[in-house]
Amino acid sequence: MIDLLAATAALVAIPSISHDEATIADHVERRLRAVPWLEVERVEHNVVARTILGRGRRLLLGGHLDTVPANNNETPRIEGDLLWGLGSADMKAGLAVMLELATTESEPSVDVTYVFYACEEVARTHNGLSRLFELRPDLVAADAAILTEPTSAQVEAGCQGVLRLDVTVTGERAHSARPWLGVNAIHRLGPVLQLVAGYTGREPVIDGCVYREALQAVGVRGGVAGNVVPDAATVTLNHRFAPDRGADEAIAAVEALLAPAMDEGRGDRIDVLDRAPSAPPGLGDPLLARLVAAAGAQPRAKLGWTDVAFFSERGIPATNFGPGDPGVAHAAGERVHRAELETVYRVLSELLANP
Image 1 (cartoon, rainbow, N blue to C red):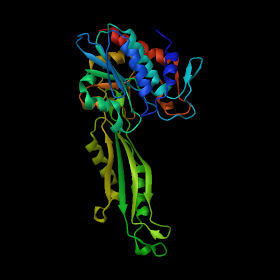
Image 2: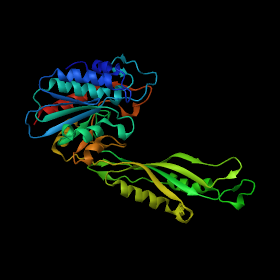
Image 3: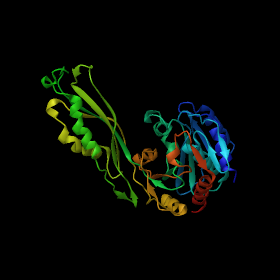
Image 4: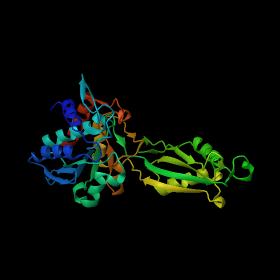
């Protein structure tokens, strides 16, 4: 096995901010095309390599090529067993593991698809995995999938769904010197915010994983002028819901929570701005069950949204398992430890080797 920390540092040294992944995609494509047992195809800046061995099942390993913008951390730095640098955890460490597996595992017990894709860190409309499902679904067909997202080398199962909603309440304009002649819409947001602040999230347990739901106000806007009682005010909410609910059910739950503060007769409304589906753990799948056994630790819920949802939508069980602490992702001090790289490589190598 190569020095995975040094291999990750080499990938960190290749700039790949979202929408600028051409160089790293070229690098990955060159590496993979040199491997005789892989069939390699490129779609835009997404690179897919597959074994065609006629095995009974196919496992997909996926990782995104892009990073967020740099924060004075674009130059990789190795100190002992730690690598510091942009994308070191999220997720060039996972890419380094995938490249090592792809270029060394010539006879896996299952057929394997390695997917290196662009634009994960930006809007879903640009997501390279989504583009592959749209343009070449045959390339991402699989019986199960593992994304090497940073999980501190622990299985993080499924993912939460996401809603972004605007809650708008109305009022009636008046001069601020005579507010009793109007209705202040900003003041009417008070009960809405109280309900949100008092929200207690459900914690359903699915396949032994506890999914903790959350509802947060993430933006407020309103006001007309410094001397006018405002007639409309809006709060933007972010809701993370567990995979035992669909988006429609989650929307209905938020509407029921806020109903005491809403007056439809006045024109109060809730508008859904964005929605992303949740994904169940899927750990009953034989390949993912073997992953859990090889990892040797109790899996935990993914408290956040990841691209496993793209697979779940299409009936493919998927989970997250990769090196790097998700808590340092996107931070100036982003880093990854050698031990996590080697653990993830060992576990995935065992998974591919054993039928």
